[in-house]
Length: 153
Image (cartoon, rainbow, N blue to C red):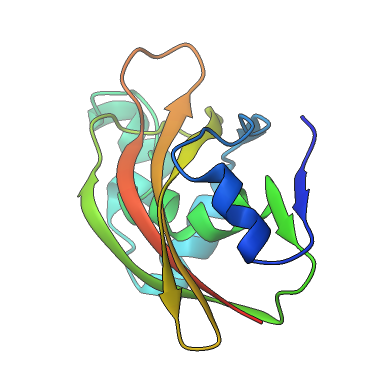
C-alpha cells in the first residue's frame, strides 16, 4: 500500500468522493485488548478473561471492544494519507457508528475508507470519512462509521 501524499489541504479536494488506499492487515492481540480495557475501565470478562471466554463466549475466545475499532480510525487513516502542511489533527466526532460483527482475539483487521466530505474549518478543514473496518475471512465488518476529523494548517 502506498500512502497518498498532499502538499496542503486545498490539494486534498481532489480526493473528495474517492476511495483511499486499502489499509494493511494488522492483528488484534490480547495485549491490545487488555490495554484498551485498562484505559477505558471496561474489563468485562468477554474481553479480558480468556478462560471464561473459552467456555462461555459464542466465539470461544475473548473479543475486542467495539469502541477499540473506532478509537483506531484516526491512526488507520493517518497511515493512508499525509498532508505536509498540517500542523495538527483532531478527532471531531462520529456519525452512524455500528459494530456488526465481534472481533475475536488474534483477528486481522484493515481499514477500507473514502473521503465523503471536506468542509472549511477555522485554520483548516473538517473531513468526513466513510470507514469500514474489515475482519479477514469474515463477510460482515467489525465496524462501520462516518468519522469526522479536523486538520489544521
